[in-house]
Image 1 (cartoon, rainbow, N blue to C red):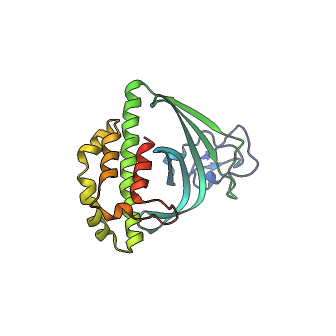
Image 2 (tube, rainbow, N blue to C red):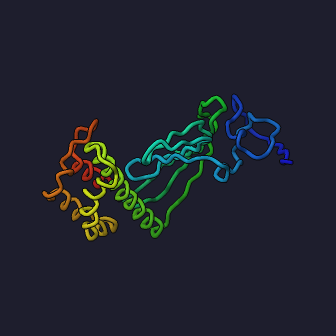
Length: 219
């Protein structure tokens, strides 16, 4: 039999969604679940990035795959929002705000758990490189999606169209990962043999070439 847990503390306005997936019975489901370890529960994470940073993770009760890299998430449970503080390009601190959803889908914005992480110089360098790796990977994924959508072709054909060129950028990408943007941006700007670079992205009114350059410039 599952354990009966008696919780004490601050109360929200309604019952919280997390208690539907928490493997214990609790005495009051309106108590703010500050100390429940939601990251070990069976929940689906939706990651949201901004300027190469992971700025939000929302944990959902349900998730359905509908296509290549596309999912439908339902019944949100917990939200983590992250803010990054940098100075001269170096990451100094990350602030995280954790909020919980009520059972009716409303987010409780009043009761917030705050956590912060400070970065040493070496940790900042590692975090910076990971951020740039994400930018490169995301560019590759999105470029492939753009080409498939514009040309209305299967993924395998689109990969054959763009990946050989992207793989040829090994030296420039390594330079980018080490903090230098110029070589990679110059190579993208001057490339003339890849027709797909000048495709107009539907809904964005810019070329794939300009999309790549804009994304590289945020690093």
